[in-house]
Image (cartoon, rainbow, N blue to C red; front, side, top):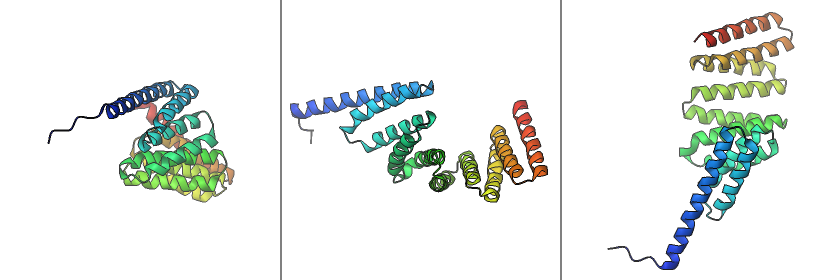
Length: 221
């Protein structure tokens, strides 16, 4: 059957929806340009304007994306309470969608970062573990290693030094396998600091030497 003619009133609503979508997209793109230039406060302002437009349509996917963007920019500007609130909104949506698994993982790790800065270490550990699990399912080895490093750093803050060292060794292996020598070097230095803190000065010195070798290899590649 040939489609029926759309009533003028319905067509007007459709045109209005399309116009609103275009305005929201323009604000989002402007915000992303500011973000790429590290103009995070301007980026948050544009993302917030886009959200105001999108809220009328109730598009959950767009609203989750905007919350993720605002959360990421808030992290960069050390607005940790705002970052955790926004990333929690995005994570709540993404974790129910198998096709947004990586976004869920990124939000979970960002939540961990914000909560660690707020000294809510146990909550941070939970989100880092959730992010690691999601990245493992997506087979993103480098991202798993970044989660291991974040876990190690947070365990160190909780004075769980032996646990921190064990998981940081996993991070080093992951970074090395992915040829991320700078990240491996940073992890070695963190392990050196932990060993020095418990009086293992010989182990600390060896880890510092390994970090130097990694950095030299990175510069020569």
